[in-house]
Length: 195
Ligand code: GDP
Image 1 (cartoon, rainbow, N blue to C red):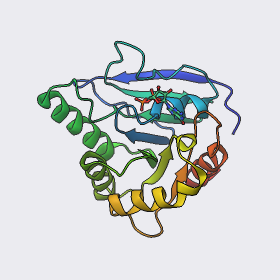
Image 2 (cartoon, rainbow, N blue to C red; image 1 turned 45 degrees about the vertical axis):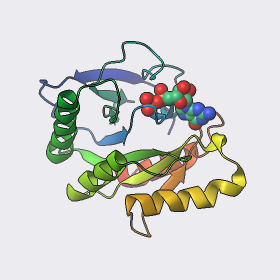
Image 3 (cartoon, rainbow, N blue to C red; image 1 turned 90 degrees about the vertical axis):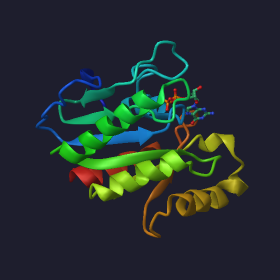
Image 4 (cartoon, helix red, strand yellow; image 1 turned 60 degrees about the horizontal axis):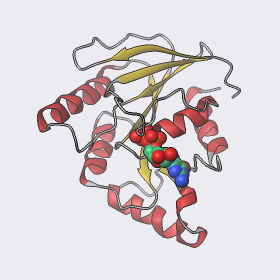
């Protein structure tokens, strides 16, 4: 898909009411620093529209990006951010859960996992939540350029087993640097949206 217009339409904090959008939504979940903003910027073909972790003052919100007036990218708050209190982490967990539970337009959930590491306990919790809400997450293994080509299959297996994902769960490797995998991610979204 050619992205012609992008608009950060709604930003939700902990106490905000979630929007009742009429267009399809695609959500992106992942722990802080996994490369979520870089992926979203890559998909939107924008350099720094979605805020990256390296930017100070990045606040934890659910951001709804209107794409081409056709669909929404829903950027869920990165979990596992060390500098946040346990109380706030729990509140954010509830907010993400509430979104997954109540969105009427959610068509696809991407869960991002760093290709270099075994999934963490939080990644596993997130995966299980998504499945529990009735969605079949598609995993994006980020930072593909950071490993040798020979390690790829082994790392993908580690992600699958670490999450306890089914053998037919899709895992798409992606690099924000080379943009490798971008076409496959778009194809996956278009299939979910019926485009
Ligand atoms: P977020 O917290 O999940 O939104 O993560 P960011 O997109 O801000 O990325 C965190 C850090 O990882 C930044 O320094 C990015 O430049 C870097 N990064 C993200 N994706 C990639 C990638 O595919 N390859 C490499 N080499 N670095 C990446």
